[in-house]
Image (cartoon, rainbow, N blue to C red; front, side):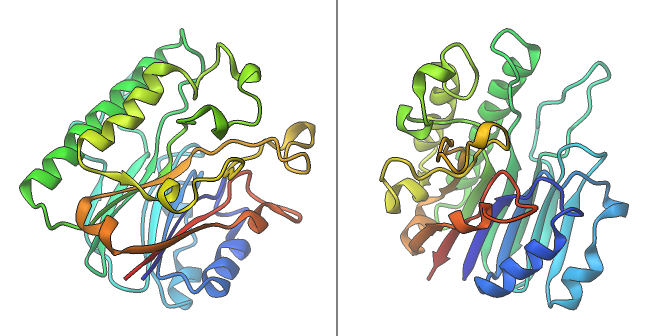
Length: 262
């Protein structure tokens, strides 16, 4: 199985790219984040015509997550238990969707950005990550043989080498000790971040801002990851970051991360 995760930054703007990527890389399951559309606006038919089933959760022009699969799509779950809410009138944002695809429980995740360290969104982010971690630990405890993939845009750069200039990010989100601790806590839940396992090199970024020629200068961030349960970690044989997907007109600011699973 080939499983990919990709913050596509608007599926309607990049539908052609998504379809071409599926075919070019022979992808079986694609987890998307930041689809930026309601369920009624998602281009289901285009993927169905290509032989894929689709599960999507979108409420507005913000956020939005999807799982696209040609190896089955079962037990779809919108959000995880006790998922934190946000807003003046708190709502469960479209940031998590789960489904079983070819025997693997896939979660497409769009972790909150945090905005600024003193912003309520930052506390929301930490609560969101902590609650997800508690759920992940419970899932593995209930079934140690379960193959679970927590993939997506984590909005955390775990290491200083995951950003192009650590000093530039001083006092900003994504690199603070609490965020990094919340990310690392998934190891306590017995999950392994497999992209680092296969791609430990510095400069393996997955995101480059559109502004100030960040991509041509390779001034990026590594914030898209794949945490796998013990049973799934053993089955992952390779991981790739498709840097070329950032090239050309109309590219997303993120690129796909691809897992090969035995």
